[in-house]
Amino acid sequence: MVEVDNGGRWYRITDLQKKFSLGRTKVWELVSQMERNNDFPRSVIHAGTRVTLVNGESFERYLWTVNEEYWKKQQEKEAL
Image 1 (tube, rainbow, N blue to C red):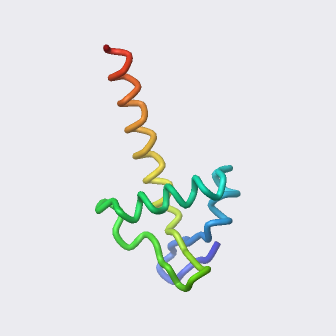
Image 2 (cartoon, helix red, strand yellow; image 1 turned 30 degrees about the horizontal axis):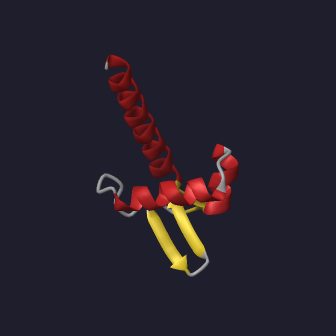
């Protein structure tokens, strides 16, 4: 984890894996989706070919968004 002057916390992919108990492939999938989502601008920094930093607060908010979408789809399936 890297803390910056504005108090934000930025995580490497491996840090996110440990923090959220997710596999590397799943973390990369989520980060890639988050990058394409306009609700999360400037949440990912590619500082080099092997260095990617992700804003921790944004990543957690994105996980909650994915969670809400998942449960919404599940409710729609049950309604059928």
